[in-house]
Amino acid sequence: MTRERTGLLIVFEGTDGTGKSTQLQLLARTLTEKGCTVISSREPTEGQYGQQIRALYSNRDSVSREEELALFLADRKEHVDTVLNPGLTAGRIILCDRYFLSTIAYQGAAGMDTAQILEKNAFAPDPDICLLFQASIQTGVDRITGGRGEELNDFEKADYLQKVASIFNEMDFPYIHRINAAQSIEDVSRDVLTAIEPLLEKLT
Ligand code: TYD
Image 1 (cartoon, helix red, strand yellow):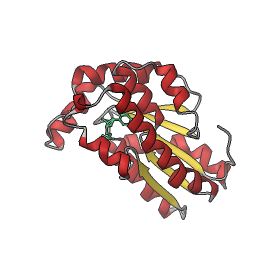
Image 2 (cartoon, rainbow, N blue to C red; image 1 turned 90 degrees about the vertical axis):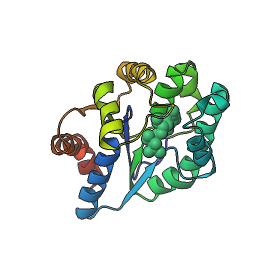
Image 3 (spheres, protein in one colour; image 1 turned 135 degrees about the vertical axis):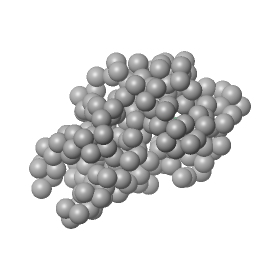
């Protein structure tokens, strides 16, 4: 979709436990210190559909795959209309934790057709850059169950995540920039800054 590109849409993607949320916060802080106006957002959102999605985390089989996809799309539509498009028009830098690439990878891994998922997301503006965080599934699972002391929810089971990762691996959108997320937080953060620097130069 074309839009007036006065702002920037920076998307953080990857399988669970790859550290994208931590890196999003670090980047938000760095950009704010540089004087940029940053909007940090995420999907699923806190809105009505996002809340319904979170309620499914421990009981995914209570809805069909089609209903699940419809919820992610409804959540995204609301997010695009109320946060992303207005923010971009106002020239903001938007950092978004997950976006339609997650739908392609996660709902694709659940058996839905990936080309159709992409088509259904045509309303969503393309990212200016998508930072795709990559680390082994075991690293991510260890971070979730060890570091965070959490149990894996239905979206985080290892064999499912393996399928999700292979769909992410095959993606070749021109705006994807792969980040080695197996490194230390500092090294990943440095790679994130290096990746987005050319875009910031264009903005100023
Ligand atoms: P996550 O980033 O882990 O959010 P939270 O911190 O609220 O748990 O995302 C939630 C899960 O939703 C994650 O496992 C991936 C999944 N998901 C999809 O299956 N499809 C989508 O379109 C999106 C945005 C997320």
